[in-house]
Image 1 (cartoon, rainbow, N blue to C red):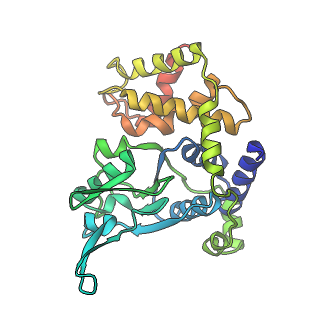
Image 2: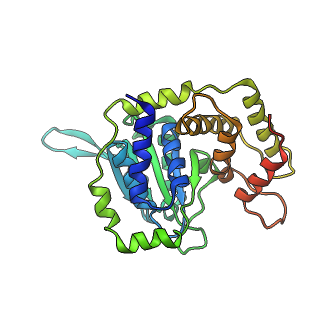
Length: 306
C-alpha cells in the first residue's frame, strides 16, 4: 500500500463532497489517523453531519448515528439487557455505541448525564453495562457535532468531555464560489451514499502505525514543551494543558507531517494543528476580547521557534 497515494485519494474524495474547506478536511483526516475523536462545532446547516458521514464511508468504517436530545438516556447509547422467555435469561442488546464510528449529532443537546456516559467509551474503548465490561469494536471513533451554546436547548460540554476530543474544528460558511457549487450541484447526502470505501480492512491500522513511526526530534519536543509551559504560565490562560493534551499535540502533528509527505515533524506541523488541538481545552485570561483560538495564535507568536 502506498500510504501517500491512499491519503491523497482520501483527501480528494472528501473535497468533492465538502467544497472549499481543504484545511478543515485535512484536520479531520489527521485526527482520525492519530486515533483521536473529533468535535465539529458550528451553526446548523453548514455540512457538519455530511462531513462526518463522508469520513466514515471513505475510511470504510461501520458507523451509527445518534441524534442527541434532552431526553436521551445513557442506556440508549450503550444498550440494555432484555429478558427473553425462550432462553429463560437476560440477553444483552448492544446500542449504537457498538460501532466503529459513532456520529453523535448535536451532542450538546443531551443532558450532562448522557454526555458523561460517553467518557468511558472514548477513553477506554469499552463500556460497563450492568456491572459487565464490554469492549467496543476496533477502531472506535466518536465524531460529534455541536451547535453554538447560545442556541436554545444546548448544554455546555464538561471539561472532562472536551478533553477526550483530540480536535475541535469549525467549518464556517462557504465562500461565494463554493456556495455556488453547492447551489448548482448534486445533493450532498446522495453523493455521500455513493462514496466508495477507499481503505480495506486493516489499512487504517497500518496508516496509524505509520503515523506513530513519524520522527519527532528532541528540539521539536522541546518546542512542544515550551508551548505547554506557556499555557501554564498564567499569562494566556486560566489553567494550563495537561500531559494528555501534550501527547495529543504530538500525535496530531505527526499525522499532519505524514499528510504533508514527510516522515519527520517540523515546527510548522505543530503550529498547523495547535489551535484545533488545544483551544477547546483552555479558557483565556482577562478581558482581551479574544477567543481561545485567537489567544492560542497570539501565544504561538510569543514562543520562540527551535
